[in-house]
Length: 206
Image (cartoon, helix red, strand yellow):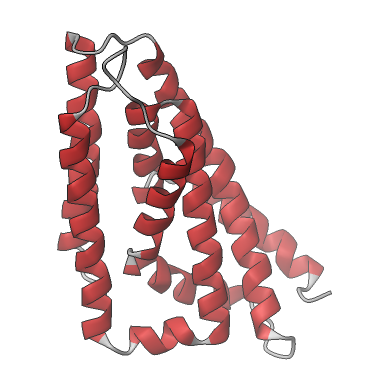
């Protein structure tokens, strides 16, 4: 087995505790659920989980560590993520959420957005580089261990963030396009996206 069973058993509850901690991924799925419903909320969670697996693979290959040594590359990724989140905030404000006026959000779109937001957040790279190696056994193949631990984190995040998105979808379900509730939730969704952008812009990657 690529990962020591005892180490894996210790990693699972630690990973779940991190998944349950409210953060950018959870808030993003909440916003997507409010914006498009339960299915896009789950799709956004799946996109984030897929991004986490890619980050884990890059860390296992050593590419993330290499990227972390070049601040300019980190800054480019970070500001790309900020711009993308602000674009989502503006787009959310311009389109009704519920009712016949609201076109909704296709799950495929939500998946791509979740993946893009995760991949343009350099804090994910730093987190994986700081957390996962604590459980890696040096005398075993490194990449398989990173992938297994990444799968554990991604699976836990998929379920927890997906449930958050589904709950937000329930709030959206009875809305009428153009109603007061529709406008309030539209502003709430946009505020979440903008807040994530500000958080990413103000948080140091070092």
